[in-house]
Image 1 (cartoon, helix red, strand yellow):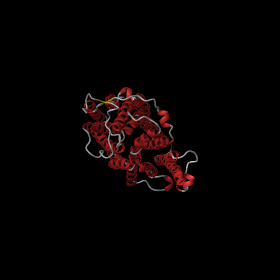
Image 2 (tube, one colour):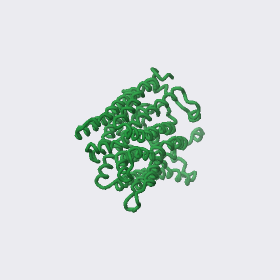
Image 3 (tube, rainbow, N blue to C red):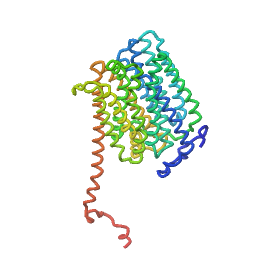
Image 4 (tube, rainbow, N blue to C red):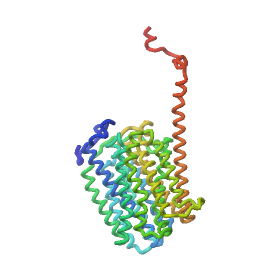
Length: 457
């Protein structure tokens, strides 16, 4: 299969048998893996660059903590709408065209965002921040929705392993974005970090035009509403929401808290954010392999990961009622816990939602993959809107310590509800088997009808 100009249809999609999965990948699979890895890395490094210095820069322009949270939050809100629409119509638009177009739009917006320091007036600065970030969010939604769907399409039997491996590059983007952005900001000012990374993202456009095949598929009649109203998927989506809201909360509040509490410079704040991204990056491949080889473990990884995330946020400040003094080593350790638990919870969610969709009658193919990718992106975006918006408001109203505790409480609630559902499901599944085990042969015999041998006699 050639990467450029060759169409891949539903009928001739590469099928993998479990015994051959770990062996040599096809040329098209290798090229697709390289392509999606480049998208994940470049997109996430551009996304994460804002954390160390933009809140401080916006504050100098006259923006309040709540407005800064809204600037981060509007990105997620537009990402939400883009994910739903693009996920629904991925077949009609084309997965490859959607990904390339998203990269092009996002690269242009990144460069434009770097020119905002030339805007003198506070109101104009804030308005342009909202406009550019909103357009950038739609481009990001296009790239991420299509990349998830393409990955699951090309690797149908190893979704968690592939996504976990790709998260290495997502993690690298998250790792390099804050320190690179902070160092470039300190050395060259506000503009250069955005211009450089915007150009890097633009180079991904021709690269992926060559690397990716064209995917043809038939649209299905399934909808997001039907997918979202499945109880198990709804609860998993709640967990995804808590993960993304926690990351959004850190984006909008951690840099100001670390600067004021520990007198840290933007460069060191960028290094501080490694506490989240580095453990996530290192643990994701292993967690992906575990999720694929032991599917029954996925549900408990999500639950335990959610509980660990909740604990990390509660001790991030830490919670004032414990009367523990805020210390830098404790902050870094809790960020590490959050990063690792994010991988535990996040990696199994996509394959678990996809399997649940198939079990409930959704058609196997690119259309359903687009729905699942769009739903994942939409729920993630809701959390990314809620986290910085609510977190900025609560930090301004109360303080960082209480705001982080509330964020942890929401995460605990989601993990508790999902764990309760899994336990209830397990009890209901085991109940019929226990009854059958206790039946006598006479009790288990059918009341009506005879066996085929009896009827012959």
